[in-house]
Image (tube, rainbow, N blue to C red; front, top):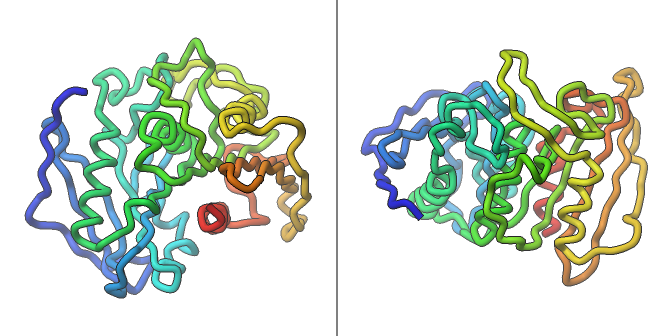
Length: 291
């Protein structure tokens, strides 16, 4: 692996967060001559053994934007003893596993693994997190980044949730697979015009080509097979708590003792968005806790 230079800036910016009573902290880490930034609400207690949850933004976004979308998750951080961290992608994108991606981090081969490893060490030193309880939940391009971390850095990541994101097609896949079974939850919509349920090409609104992705069912099968599951998953229809949103959710689940759980939330009628019937980030935490 290429050597990377990592340093923690001595000063950080502390602001009052709109999403929590605790002050918002923004800090940076130098990775291979690039300062990579991240944001979090300072923990309200000094308890040890905290879990760490990375919440990843989609292509073209940033970490601060995700704070408004994970408010309910952050509200649980004190009582559930975890820290939620909102990293910024490199120039608003992630270097994922999509070979065809024409985004800056892909073209420059930005070292994302080094960034996340450095953040884990930062929170271990500063807030005594439990390194065995590191989780990732990502939306769209952030979901692709979550997949990458489970594929290339499984020894550091306990479980992931990928929202409106499917794995790249094999021809569009350029990550070195360690092929370690991990708990994975996928939340995809059947009417998503961008990350289509049946797979295909992804071209972003700004014309950026991200290449081909697998179908949702193929992505689910990838993780299920890796975990050693065969046959059919269990199926449960979740309560339709918001009938007006035109969406319902079916949960397909593989869960056996001694194997990592693999779950698919099929959002029938769901587009490239979040369903109203559940809070996807809180649901992700419920999934993580089961692991």
